[in-house]
Amino acid sequence: MTLSTIGTDGIPDARVLILKDVTDDGRWAFASGIESGKGSQLRANPVAALTFYWSSQIRSVRLRGHIEVAPAETNATDFRERGLSARAVALAGTQSTTVGQPSTMGQLIEQAHQRLKHDPDLTSDGWTVWLLRPIAIEFWQGDPSRNHLRIRYQRHGADWTSRRLWP
Ligand SMILES: Cc1cc2nc3c(=O)[nH]c(=O)nc-3n(C[C@H](O)[C@H](O)[C@H](O)COP(=O)(O)O)c2cc1C
Image (cartoon, rainbow, N blue to C red; front, side, top):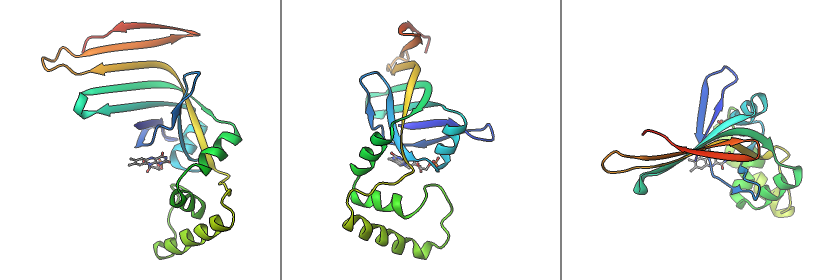
């Protein structure tokens, strides 16, 4: 999915991420380092949009909403469930910061691998699961004759309304 945020300079920013989960209470989860570009942006402005696109089905889903941070235990569990290499890279350096010496990256990652070998439960303090609580969700289904189907759901407190939009 594409996660769009508001840059600290007010200019939109966007990047591709994995959707980790949709919780029972309807929050959409993704994970990253808290010191990353998106982490700083979400802390300054805890709002975001998510966009999904399935080209073979000509289908898209988009959401807008407010961002919350998951409890520390959820962050730690998510980190431990990541693959070994993903954990090693996250422990070796801070996401979205400048690489000082590219030639030492491999060494730092290898050191992190060794640390994980001795302590497989090691977690990264900055690893964060973010939860988007949607205020609007739109489903878009493409139609060969361009009579595309757009259904917009809007949240009003605990209730949702839906309406069809012109394509
Ligand atoms: C297919 C794909 C999946 C990705 N999944 C994640 C993810 O789940 N979490 C993450 O932090 N970055 C993920 N990335 C990397 C992000 O696109 C991005 O480069 C990184 O999060 C830094 O973005 P930022 O500087 O805006 O914070 C993924 C990239 C691709 C192409």
